[in-house]
Length: 119
Image 1 (cartoon, helix red, strand yellow):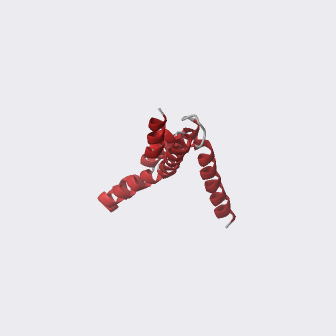
Image 2 (tube, rainbow, N blue to C red):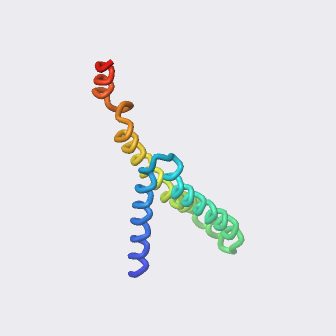
Image 3 (cartoon, one colour):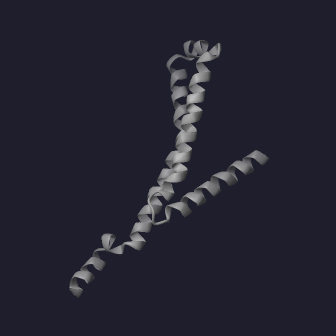
């Protein structure tokens, strides 16, 4: 049960760090954690793809389960990249709200109208 709480705390902290980094003016700060997640998943995937075919049960696994086994393998690979996708979604949402609040002329029609009337 302790590992569950450690994992949950690290996930929540990483989301909080992503929100904090995404609200910076620079574009690159918010892309640090998605890049780390993507590289980590890619390294794990490369390790998995080099070790998995060397096992004796790899051929039996694919012949026994056929396309369902291959589909399960593809799903496992896809789930590796879910944290990177979640961090990217948080990044894009936070950047949208940052630009909306800090550059209102680009998003607010009434503000644009007011500026045009002042000229």
